[in-house]
Image (cartoon, one colour):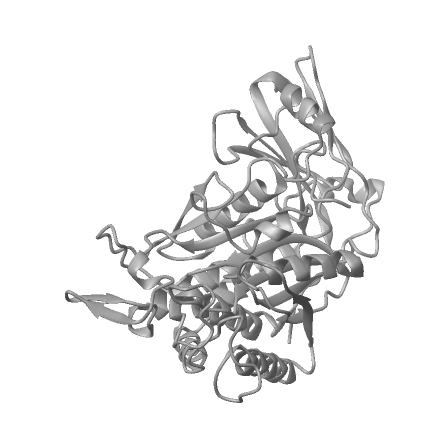
Length: 455
């Protein structure tokens, strides 16, 4: 087990100058995480999931070899095996509810997701989550009997989650990580709704959901073959924004700085720094045009979340009965999944999870002032000292308002207020991130409720 925690120095007058020294610019252990991700193991897990024949939400649950019941029990057992390899570091649970009376779930059906929880050592009630979808489908959304391999959509995402668990469970982090195999996505995002409700009931402070849905296809229906780019979808304003908050945002900004959007920016930076031959496309939209994914139920209750996926989809290989017509293949079969690409996107997730779980508590109650002034001042709350034992300090960020990524930053030490002199508030957007002594860093938190990740 590799430990990532370093005890923070107590700030005294004599150590104040030392506190202003920036932590390392990269987290060396994240390179180890990326290197440990195995395309071979991901491919093996995808094959096992495909071999269940169908994983449709309405499919067989009693068989040990076919249907979603067998698939979720196998995932549960694999998480337990991963836990045994790290000395019991994962708590593996089912989270379920019965759904009925819906267009795609007309009869009472138990929707069951599988979660493995790796508890943090300093701030265990703070979570980041990686998720994929267990279920698959063919052309008819109510067809729970036909073969539906769902190799890319979304065995690739679940296999990525399991591989991330294998790799990250060999490390310890300040915050907790949830590895989630969600059900009921194709029938209406019900697994995500159930897990989000469970999280709120349990008081889990989930700061980030990384939803992985189709991470293995490199050959698009547009004729493009691309194994070096991934898309990150994120909502621009929070789904829970009130009319009063919208008025504040209108005058202070924040329409492109929701916590989900700044989560996406962090993942983009992680790709640039830690993942060889991978660029990310930040898509300023909740999801693909008029389509949905399992991060949305979390967004809808105020939990930040993004969708990570391939750039060039092939629609003949999504939601299709298995067949060949006029020399054209239809169906989501395993020969069209690129395991190396799935591993690359899994590495991106694992690196981002490690960065955020290793970070100190995210800045809370961030405020800003500087109207009719040459200077801009940011303030935030001091965290619980026990939860923040690895805190080195904070980094203030700013960028021009038309720029997609943060351009400028300054490490300001372990303080709760900082003034940028001669940086005019009217010309930039601002934010602040917490930084651990090893360099692990939270997403940038935009001031006010518009950008808050919560307490």
